[in-house]
Image 1: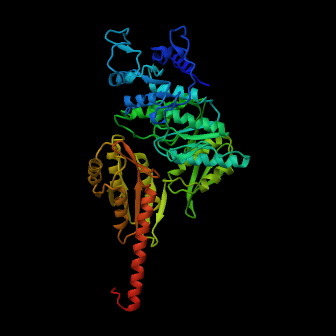
Image 2: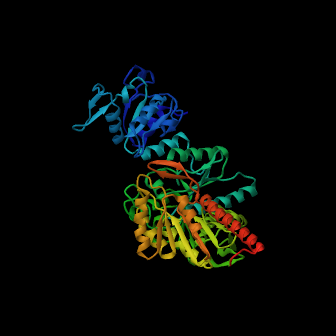
Amino acid sequence: MKTIGDLRKLLYGQGLLVRQTGGGAGEEGEKAGDRGGDGYINDEREITWITYDSRKAVPGAVFICKGASFAPSYLEDAIAAGCAAYVADRRTEERIFAELSDGETAGMTEGEGAGTKRTDAEPSGKKQSGAIGFIVSDIRKAMAVIAADFFEYEPGVPFLTGITGTKGKTTTAWYLKGMLDAWERERGGRETGLLSTVENYDGKTREDSAMTTPEALILHEHLANAKRSGISHVTMEVSSQALKFRRVQGLRFAVGIFLNISEDHISPIEHGDFEDYFSSKLSIFRQTETACVNLDSDNSDRILKAARKAGRVVTFGRSPLADVRYSRVRRENGKLVFHAESERFSEDFCLAMRGAFNIENAMAAITAAYIYGVPVRCMKEALAKIQVPGRMETFSSLDGKICGIVDFAHNRLSFERLFDAVCQEYSQYGRVVSVFGCPGGKGLNRRRDLGLIAGLFSDKVYLTTDDPMAESAQAIAKEVREYVELVGCDCECIEDREQAVSTAVAECGKEKTLILVLGRGSEKYQRIGGKAYRYPTDAELLGKAIREYDGWGEMARRSRLKEEKAGTYLR
């Protein structure tokens, strides 16, 4: 059982507590507990829940005031729902007091600095609610510390694998989970856990993912569920944002995988420049026991230096210097096959998924499985059958003239590797058509990079909507279009994504065409104007468009046969 007093001691012990407000300002607050030696109330009320969503506030909960979109009215709603305490940083406290104060000066006292104020009164006149406010120096760190304490996080239970990199995190996570699952089945164990861009599974719940790496409160709830369910391993994607904004603060990764690095997520709300982005990703090694490093990655020397922070480093890649290395890549019966070896094995592996770039993801998973002691047969079983939703999903028309691929490729590195794979593996298609968009307000460098790459390797590009947020989807497409047309590629802007995919299929003509629908993969929501709207996945859109194409083609074929039989068909 955790109490409000325990929370105060935790924040104070971590050097996060700036001051405590409310709770002791009235008679009700005094009844909550005795004053401690530091003058604060030792409140013994039990903490029933922790949340940053006022809609999930319950009596006895602690409410976290966080985020750029936080509104003081959320705190007001949380207190009305019965929250016993709230946690906010100093800037948010100023907003709360300015917007929700009843205007009375009673309860305000001069601070130590000239011109500073503080209040022991509660917002919006709720002075008798008994809610205590904890003002902290770093709300992000405080949230991670509170979550770990409330959910009783224990390093190594379950074993946690963290995967970071510019591309390939999801596929690597699914590959590794598949290997661990196969091993657990042999041992009579449970399915292992997964926290990914596509899906989260923790032994208790299986749900669509809302973000690559959950916020600390949700993350620790998943880990607690996994622990209670007896799950041995959890594999998770770790984004640069999760590292920068302390969502994974305090976690210990038994294995930390660094896949690759390329410029991405550069914007005022993400990373100011490449150095900030790269440094954020490298910080994963500070909380890693065994680091897995891809020797084929750009900046591998710097990645290796940072990996020294881990207790052990195991390398992988095509380089003969790698601890786990691969060679002899080839295609057999339409499947990618490669040879991998280490000090413990020398075997051929087959991939169910297309795209030679997935060998890198497979090698990362093999190396992590090698560290855990997973038998090679379990590695091979997983790689031979796993298909990741929204990653190199393939669709074909009945007449064989159209091949459609849905892939999550959404940044420069993933576009470069995807188009490289297309040139090598789909050369039988004379025409390449791409459908994609760029998000609003973030990853601003993508507009140039994706426009140029798609323009260089496509015969036509359809630009459409992809999470425009507060920006105009038309304005984003217009900006990207300049780069597409700069390299001489035909380009058309169709704001509605479903219409863009449908048009791309319908206008294929007689030449064999490869259609690439990129950027969203299996995502089920579009974020427009600050809200998330349910939207069909790219696989659903492309599958529907090709079925419609097949339907019209079949109707035309039957009509022609009927006319030929009647002798009225004009050749």
